[in-house]
Length: 520
Image (cartoon, rainbow, N blue to C red; front, side, top):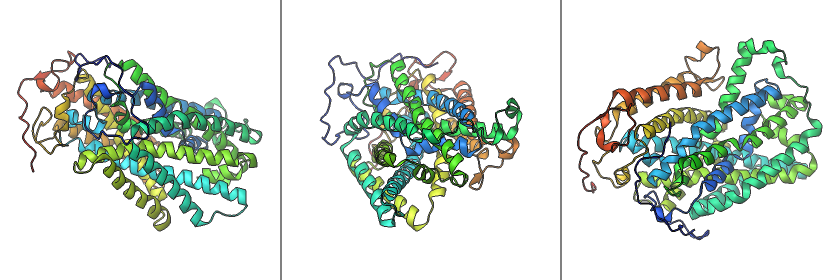
């Protein structure tokens, strides 16, 4: 059970921190945020994460139950279960930023080692690249398609290029200014987009047939059908992946939250942010049902966005375009900001702004070359799924590690890698916590073995469960089990827990390696 840490990493400060100017470029990089500068509130975490998930890309995830042949009712149940479970896993990931004043990848040094923290950075980098590209592609295609419907002509390539370019440029600009502008953007955009999604349900409602029961019917016998169970579980796990995908990035936002904020409030905000996109999922599920009734070929081919545009009433073209733009901006900024921040810790010579520009340039290459040069949209989509599956066990080890340490961190020692130093409390074996790292890799590989994405990637163990994709369930179960075994049977030195560990976690005595000067 997560509890309040017994020691604070910095002293509590009573005065209310001053809120920075919105259009001032953020001065802090990956360094620890002093507690007297932590102006952000749990509600800001809610809006940033909710905004990141409140887009056409998430609506597409909500369409998968219909693509798998489920009825609207069964699909809604699967989505609700998946989103709720994913949000429960996401919630504790907000605590690391509050405790350490830095992002989750840097905080992972305490669990994986000074060098082992690269695992978290690598996962965050891949997540940002793939999901940023998918977000821009989805939003840009929806925007170009909407304009095409208004003009009555097929969208020319140049229009799609312009849509991608504008979205990418605005995303980069917001991220350069930093977290404060990100918060302001997401206090405004998500409520508007949410209202537009509700309006969208009304727009497609005349075409909705609530009696459509999918490929499996409405009989109670369907629950004994392994094919139905496979579709149901797969739908729930896809929905679960949405909140989980933000796990590596939560520390980017919660590092500005004061240590005096109770864990319950902070986790409640993160959980609420994971659950709030149910409106978006519901829109995707609802409209996919409409498309399956009137444009079944589009659902069969997976062209959800095309069906969405083709069946939209004329008056909804403008709101649909607004959803595409606003949702794409919120999703893109929430991903690019954190990745630029973390990349500045991997390459310390780069400032946060410079690192953001480097990552943005690389992402732009992927967006345009991947779409128009090599047509690898499907490959990137598959990669995004595999990255999320590998991120889940990383989160599992982080959460168990937090509990095992009672939430205590030696903040200065977390930055040994950033400063190109050696030693410190988290040096372990030459910068690697080998029991944790090896166990994480075991869990990640095992999870990939159960992936079942027909036509894209099918793991060798998927056939053992009838082709059902249970990879995320395996990732959760194996990581929590292995992390608990490691904490219990591989005692860590007393100086990494500082006497704050729960009674079931054994410790060994010793002294940390001295921190040496930078190598250059």
